[in-house]
Image (cartoon, rainbow, N blue to C red; front, side, top):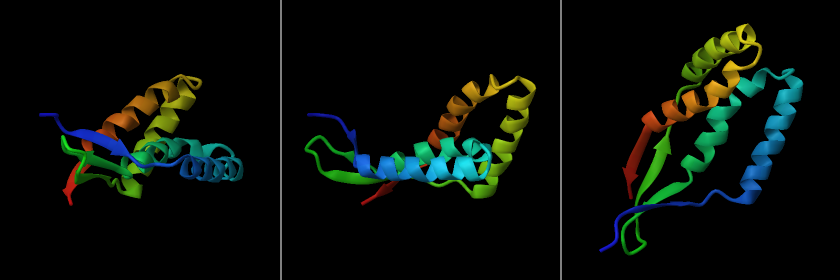
Length: 110
């Protein structure tokens, strides 16, 4: 008997579309959008992921929802830390975002 596994249905087209949007947003906001980018970059594929049983049947959908104001508050703190550390804190920011998103994961039964 096989265990449960994940199946992500996030496409290359979706990734390219998301990348283009974030490039434009980064230019328009003079780089400030890069502090909310990790949330949406990581959240999008997670929300297109399903849990499969041993036979390959979908049994649940991965759902990650984080409020924009929670994202903004967290991003502002890390923006200040990044300025103070001359950019080094941004390297630690990505794993901190991943941890927050993983802690917000809910498995929605199908």
